[in-house]
Image (cartoon, rainbow, N blue to C red):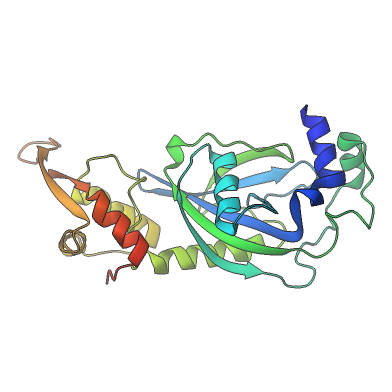
Length: 258
């Protein structure tokens, strides 16, 4: 099935495979070298940007649908995923900017009021975090662009996605104190300064450089290696790595980092 046939099948008969009027939207945050970004897409039929999302297959759990969506947009599988809020206000999917003629020119299908894609949609929000330098953003068949935006240079987003990003950031920063986040965001071996910079960037606040990493060590999340990194005269800090078993346990059970 080529892309045009796949798109037409989705528009006309997608309700057979997907649940109508309930969708997933993903705030995918990317960290690398003290930068925090968010992944945005631009639909072919809208002028603005929004979060990537999609519908839930009738055979999927919510988290499976979110994981599939994240993998399709980033090319990365198995990222840390957390549900953060459900959005269902009336008229949240304002279609005033929807270009019906462009839609018809690209699909050959008129959007009718009885189509399964029309009407109010409730969206379940998930957030994920990855190393954006390792991703290969893919827009998919419904979008013309998919790219990373610096967290401080996000354009005004379509629908209620400005609120989604705000809520996702807030939830992620609160949960940083209860879940270890960093296994896929740092090299296999790193310095305490590296993980300190990661948390400062994600939280957007200063942390005590002398005390904060020690908390991670005390919780058993980090293990000191015998290796050092030579960063200059008389400066060779030890390298650390995550204790994967303790890390996975903390993800499952939670922790208190304060």
